[in-house]
Amino acid sequence: MSTAREDLLAAGLAVFDRDGFEGATVAEIRSRARASNGSFFHFFTSKKELAGTLFL
Image (cartoon, rainbow, N blue to C red; front, top):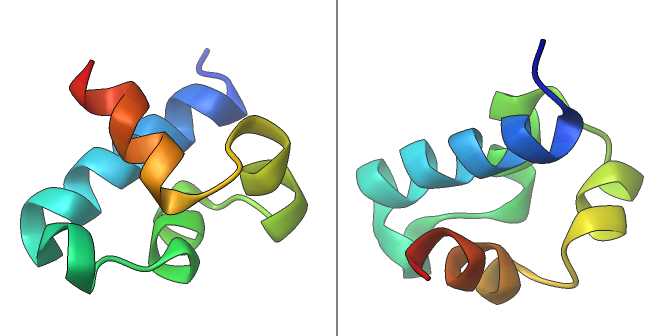
């Protein structure tokens, strides 16, 4: 069973891979992860923080 954070990370990776960092949006990441706006910002303060988590 995956967590909301894991779902957001997986969605972020997929969206960044497809659209690049600049083209990716928090809305698209949330949609792909089936997560609410509140869930996204509970785990990450920004798209940049999510990307940093993925690439570290």
